[in-house]
Amino acid sequence: MGGLRVGKANALVPDASAEHPLVLSDPEQQPLCVPDAYLEASAPFNVMQGYEAYVLANSIKNPRKIAIDRSNHILVVAGGEGVYSIRMDKCGNTDIKKILGNELDQPVAHGLALFGHSVYVATANSVYQFAYSDGQHSELKNGVKVLTNINPSNPNAQPDVAIDPFGHAYVPRSAVGLQSDVDPRQAIIKKFNFRAVPEGGYDFETDGQIHAFGTNSVGSMAFDAQARLWGIDAPFESFQRADIGGDVSQTGLAEEVNLYEFPQHNYGYPYCFTEYNMESYTPRFKGLGAQWAHPAFMNDSVDMDSYCQQEERNRRPAVPLAPGVHAHSIYFYMGTFCSVGDLETLATSVGLPCNWTDTPIVAYHGVSGQSQGHSVVHLPFDDLGHVSRWDKPEEVIFAAASPCTGAGCISPIDIAVDGYGRLIISSDESNEIFLVHRIYNELAAQMLTDKDNKKEALKEAAEEALEGDDN
Image 1 (cartoon, rainbow, N blue to C red):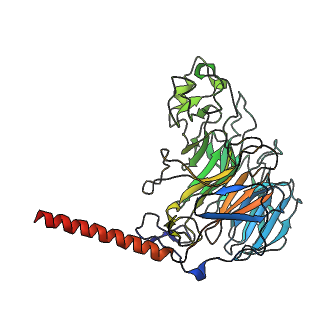
Image 2: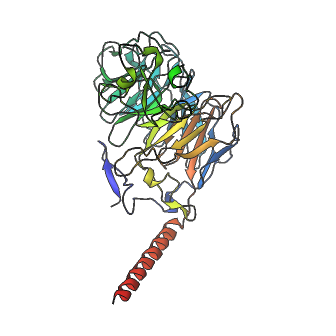
């Protein structure tokens, strides 16, 4: 039927590999109206061909993680400020309201998650639970601390909280700098059962299960259709390793997308790093995704390069990313309101493409004063094996139009998809939230059908001609 039943809720999503994916193409179903007034962007930007974008909001300071509930209502963390509710109509007009301030133990940081009838908000050291109803546009009250002691020595930490369909919450503790004597309690992701929180909440230090270690997680984690956890691991900024060319950070040091599929696996931090392209540094280069040892942990007694190349000791990343993009968040599109089409027909809906179902979109934050990053990209995956295609270029969906040379750059930090399949992007440096949608054409479905029929007719004619020649 062109669709699959996915998850505990048995949600119907398009089957990206189906010959005719499930699509919603009627104009009555599309959000085709426009906002009463467009907000001017802080800087020019580009979008992929066949797409349009506009500024949805620019009044929230330091917008970070985005959550969208079942009524298509948007919640946004404003780092250091609180949580905002964005009530949006079909046309993109918004009513923005602050629903949580900084009355917690520390300022609100990055993490935000919806589960059941609750919203979960993270500070540097804790996670709070608030009662929440879909579409709620009023103050969050009477928060309960469900987790504490995440980062007791790092008040600037920005932990995420990601909750799977079964109520398991995953919370990272990221490392502070590089230590030659590594504290095993740093650089881990722990798992907690948020369906049965004990009285007084969990203590990160003593409770929960270690799901992954050797991680240095940044930004937002995400789940794919199989409820597997994915995340971004930040690389080292730079280091000196004389035997392979000195400082290899410019092109040799990859950023990482990791799949934390199985518990208790080691992802290498801080002992190992991932190669992007070291061909210009050393004839010993191994190629994209190869594993090397950090010089701080090399010694004469252990071949650390060999150690890092052993999969049972160090899981290499699912996707190595280019250096300097400062990837910050990952999101798996689940086919909501998906579209088919091409540049000639345009699209059957405003949503993202059906063949992107259950594949990742990544926010590249970039750094002020540098041209790398400042974009949102789709990572190509193999439809059948559901694995990354390292041989195919990523698709740039949205990007700053010119190199960022000053403060206040367009700097994507989080992404989500609304109920119409439109991409929502937060940019913390420019205090903006963008909406990206595919260009809808009411005739697209018929044009695609006609093209397919013509192709089939030509194929049948060729086969008949071949049979005639044989006779």
